[in-house]
Length: 159
Image 1 (cartoon, rainbow, N blue to C red):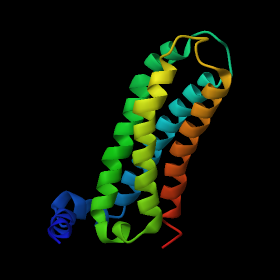
Image 2: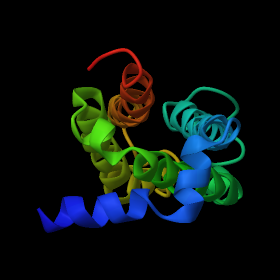
Image 3: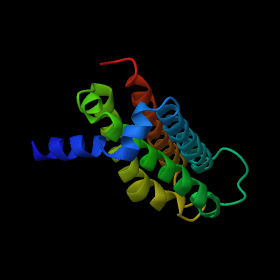
Image 4: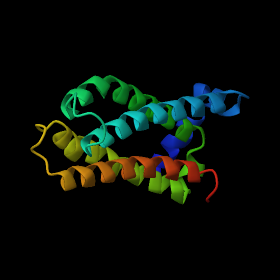
């Protein structure tokens, strides 16, 4: 109960009310959210394809991951910060939504997989990872991240 009270208080905070009730507030925040998701998914797809062996063998996946890290971090930051603002605007709507719960579960799984499994394999020496393992890891990674996006899109259509 205390958690819902805190969420309600946050949703009545001036900047959140401005975002929720203004004509351009929520569409603007949602646009930032989708931009961040696009940047994040672009870097994930590039790294997944590279890990699976598609494209040129140069540069190695670890080098490519280091080059894309600022973009991945920027996309993830935009998604998380704007997502919090979207959630706080109408928390009761999202807490009662099955697609939202699926999205949060998929997001947790994708983040854990990305930082605990994927990053370990993307940084490994070229040629040390079996092709089937690399393809499997890349498929799981891209599937988890796209599941986050698909569940997020379903929030608008499924109760």
